[in-house]
Length: 125
Ligand SMILES: [Zn+2]
Image 1 (cartoon, rainbow, N blue to C red):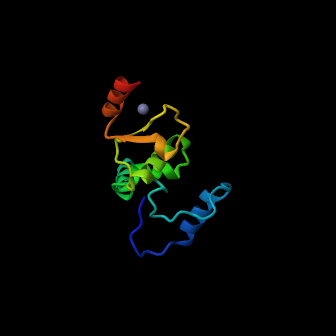
Image 2 (cartoon, rainbow, N blue to C red):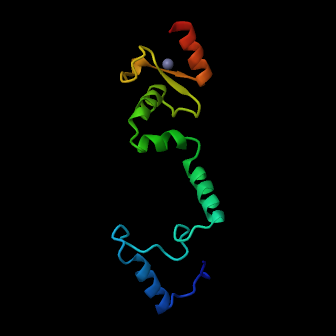
Image 3 (spheres, helix red, strand yellow):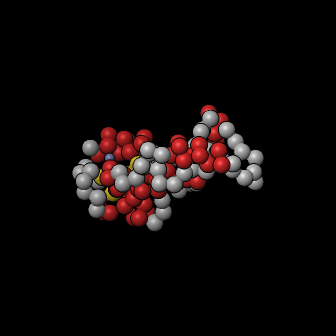
């Protein structure tokens, strides 16, 4: 379902919109007709996930997790602060004393990959 740009909405269309949003208290304002969320086709969904990837950018994956309030990722944020740069994808934050709840910057060590991290555990654990 798509509308030519600039075409004014008919009264009938407006009635349809209010009918579909009525009785759904979670929706405070109607989504515009051309909004992809309104009726996402498979193609639109692909486009949406592509643009979501673009929005994230190089620092995105770590950042969006920080915003997600996932406490298990909190140490990644702290490690990024320690390094003065965002963590790259694949970088692993290791807890030097083995206590995952001890997120003191002195207790965090960043490895380039899980492989390096595991090697460290083999050698020193
Ligand atoms: Zn570790």
